[in-house]
Image (cartoon, rainbow, N blue to C red; front, side):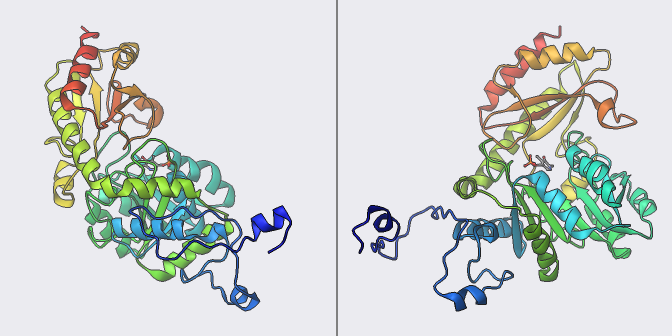
Length: 389
Ligand SMILES: *Cc1c(COP(=O)(O)O)cnc(C)c1O
């Protein structure tokens, strides 16, 4: 031991005893990973999780979270990304090249469409939209350069649940890769690798249900096929996509309760959706588990549960400003994007700005149900609807 404070504080010989175990895995923070000797450094293989190379390429904390998300999604390998959107962009960039084309459902998560429109287009990668509620529309959109088909169930905001087995069959028959945005299903409502012929890649915004707190941004890209995983992993490394250890820990801490939270939010959301259907100002309730909602039969065939997310379309006679007043009048429901957290949220959407032609007349409000008591949320909706009388 040296007498010098700095060296002694950095190279202190004390090591805590091995064998510590606690309910939560430890938080390992690293850019630098220290090797035993030069041979160990040279022997490291980036493909393998048997060792560590550099913080960006994995730590015990991120490897543990990857393994648990792979379990949740019924896959083999998972890569973590700094957001759900980064997971979508990674899949696009890893699997497409100049001259290729990808197909996106026209009701897909908006920022994912923007990646294709504004980024992929600059690299000579084309895209087309298809109507996910019409498998023929997918078949018709496939061209000689199509390589990848995105799937999402249900559609963001408008909540149509597609016939996933039919869409997957169309893509498979043409030899195309399929990537599913499984943020809504969260690995709980259905198995993305088993539905129909099974998807090739399953993406999830861990920001939503796995985090459950409205305080973490993270995404995941899960696969079953190892060669496909290694293609994605090579691009993941080249793009320098890493996640913070404390964020990974926050998701690890929330994962054990994900199924409990998912089912609780599902129960409350279904009860509120059914109640809203009986309210005179509401023209339509869009919730795939509700009889009469677009794609309900496909939801029933594929799913054992639903996320706590639904939308309502107001009577077209009601001016958008009045719908804004309804949202402003809500007290327990807060105004904000995202979902899967404890706080219930409401967002009004201008359908005409999202999709041309707009699928519905009238203004849409999307609700994310949190963990508050159903009776309190219903009373909140009732008092805000009273503003419209
Ligand atoms: C939120 C969301 C994403 C993106 O997740 P971020 O972590 O917010 O980037 C992607 N897809 C769907 C369906 C989402 O709801």
